Amino acid sequence: MPGSVEAGPAVEGRPPEVPVEINAKWCKGCDICVAFCPKEVLVRPEGEKAQVAHPEKCTRCGLCEIMCPDLAIVVIPARKGARAQAQGGAGDA
Ligand code: SF4
Ligand code: SF4
Image (cartoon, rainbow, N blue to C red; front, side, top):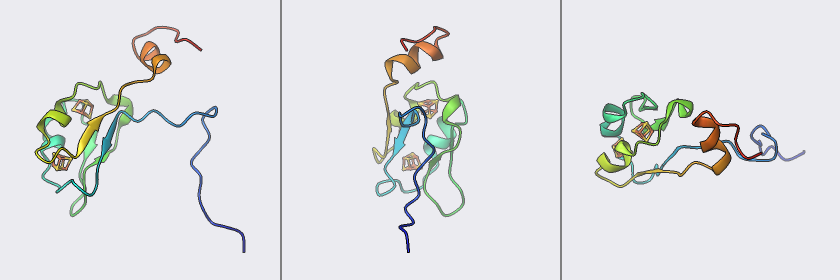
């Protein structure tokens, strides 16, 4: 039987842009990051850890990273081209 490892969708050979990374081992599900995110990027389903639900809305303001008492969430710097596009430029592609 062939392997069943699922690969994510290929996006021109580059992984999708992820604005914040949540360490599920450290997250205790306190909801602080969800409450403070001004863009409603984060959610925490009942009984689960925090999750990134709307990455496209993230402005990388850093509030979630600052407010998390368990240091479980980190803002990932935008790639150069992605940042230029987010700012309305044409990017460097
Ligand atoms: S603030 Fe930190 S510990 Fe609390 S839900 Fe968010 S990531 Fe998890
Ligand atoms: S960096 Fe700001 S906008 Fe992005 S998830 Fe964290 S609090 Fe929300």
